[in-house]
Amino acid sequence: MRGIKILCLFFCVGLFFVFHALYANSRIPYALINVCLLFTALTACFYSSISSLTLMALSWLFLYPVSVLYYRIDYFNAALPVFVFNCLQIGFLCHRDIIKQEAASRDMRLSERDAERIRISKECELFSRIENNVRDKELAIVSLYEITKKMSASLKFDDIFKVFSEFLNENFIFRRCELLILDAESALPRPGRIYSAWSPRTEKKVFDKIDYDKLINLFSEHPQKMYVSKAEDRQFFRNFWVDSEEAETFTGIPLLDGEKLLAVLLAENLSETDPEKFGILSMELSLEIRKVLLYEMVER
Image (cartoon, rainbow, N blue to C red; front, side, top):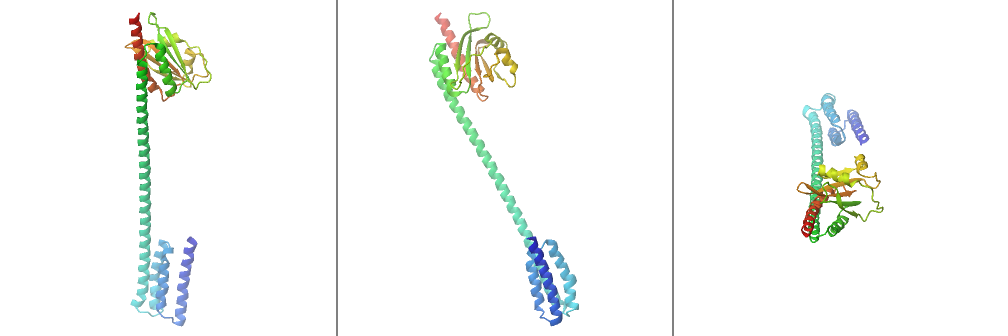
């Protein structure tokens, strides 16, 4: 494109000098000078702004004096084609500026529309995630309500933990879950009954040696939920487990009756997204354990 502009510019300049050579020798009619300037002006769309301004200046500094002094053209007829030429040049420059401004304005509008489209797309994705989260929580609440009804219908720990383990297998990702119910007749906190549940996804079911007494003492002194990753605290696993290759995370939740420790719920390799839901489930399990303990006490 740049080469075409340069060729057009040289062509117009050459045409200008050829015209003057012919005019001086053959006295070609004066109208041809207007045709030459008109053609030069019409090709101004190929020039740069500096080239157009340079041609406008040369037309007044060179062409106008030559027409008056050399060709003996009167002042008005000599100035008229130069004036028209300059007006056309100015018109093309203004038109080019208008086109540039319109193009810039169009690009800006397109950028704003793209930004608005991206913003709306992100908002739609956010609303979709919120809707999915609400739906998941609704399903979780319905599931918890169903398991609550099933566990409430039982008055034995075996039946309650069976319902509990079935719910775990259907709704959680874990390796092993254990329920340690404290011996109510012992003066010191120690496990009385132990229930275990394995995930059906577990291929190698190995009962790692766990120091239950030490764990119960830990939760007796600090009755709060725990979630520990082996990658972050390997020493914790060495203190309470044989350093098993299968156990990667530990979740422990104390089940309380007021401030009294009733049981401890343990889970291995529970997903990081599940401890909150697991904690809600443990609260219901705590209520059922208190109910069964009270029933056993009354029965005795």
